[in-house]
Length: 327
Image 1: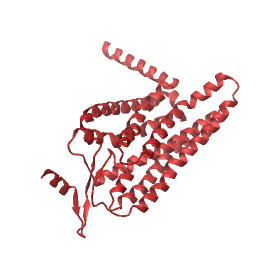
Image 2: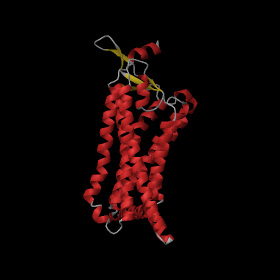
Image 3: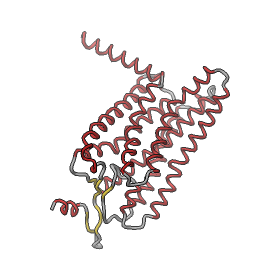
Image 4: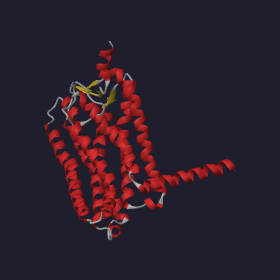
């Protein structure tokens, strides 16, 4: 009786008497019930650390005048993006792990799809912008600040959002306009284009072509841009005669290089894995949870300016508490 009522509630009938899906079932990790509580605690802790870590970076950048430079404006923008990216998927996954109701509404699914892809594309282009910034700083150190003005910096920081959310709007539109008349079970913890296309009862050819074209602009082009800038950066560093000079030049871009490698490395592993395999959900966890979790630590542990801002903040907090206690 329960299964029949659930099946009935998941579908509606349109004006032409066709059965249409009104919600999807995110299967997530329901096939390994014994691990769901462990996953819930692990993912919740990771989410909290990721959010607090990125918020801390934003606060340090805001309160320390020495961090009011283009590089840290981009890092702060990246931190905001990471907070939004994990929040699109993780709260729903956490709810899925502890709730018997695994469903997500039709509108909710495509809203998640839009922001999941849009913010992912934004991250690709922001990483490319950050690579350009590092290339400019290393190859034109004396003209860097005159070229990378605050106006240009804010424009470059905002451009990836426009590109990412626009491309995602187009791909989401072509995927949402497909007909969904059942089944409605997605073998993942997030609404993504490929599994949704597989559930469609209409021809997804146009949607698949649109997503393929979008993938070139969204992932391949910024990836090539990043590779190009780093080839130029490495070539410049190799020409520096002193080892101290080489080390100093490389230290200014090492954090970004690690973050970009982690992001593209995990994303590529996820998307070359056959859809529907048991492994792809765990690989997707790395892409959506682990990588954003590591990024704040990479930028703080490898960055002297951020660590200095942390020490200053700690001193200010101690002074404030001391004044509060004695007064």
